[in-house]
Image (cartoon, rainbow, N blue to C red; front, side):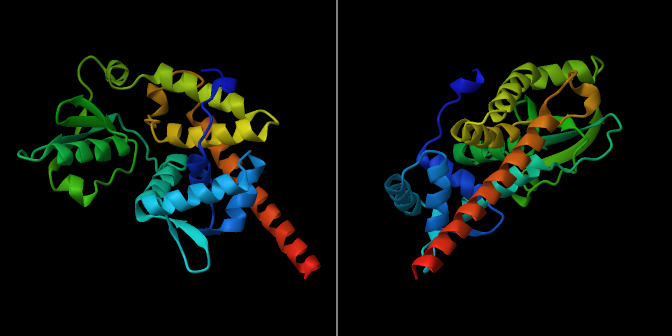
Length: 253
């Protein structure tokens, strides 16, 4: 995909991007309508989407007409924040190994566990065995720790680089990251917003590996910096629009 070929975001995705990137826990309807209008979404479309998102449990509407993320999406917000600011530690060459040790779980439980392990940036070496370089401050959630055992070990005799290549398609990730970076270098607010929304999801899949295991010119840090900078632009834009609306209301009053 080249930068202009980014899949357009839906109204729901646009509103979630605004809420996920907000520096406050709730946004008013006016704030959401104003900010969404800058990136091409009409007020009527935004209001319909907010109603549907409330019914679906994506957002919670308060008595004053503001919206906040549901707990499920608030957890996603925390993961995106962690993706933009990963907690690193010096790598001594060791690997974290998480092994599923509990049998007899339902298919749904197994699927949830796989999702949780992937969100921890672990990769599946074989069924029930997940690993990654021990360069992150990795904390297993209680639900994962209850069915898994964690070990620390060394890479196999084939070496850490070969193991990394087996576990992650780094070239594919980097190609998409560079195209997202290119899309942010434009004056088109719609394209930039689309790239920001997409980069937030893409950063969740960055394995955040030690530099020694990454190709030259790895774009992970650049994409994180770009995403953080653009999120701040969205915050500043929303504040500016809200302040302008407040001034108009004061003048008309």
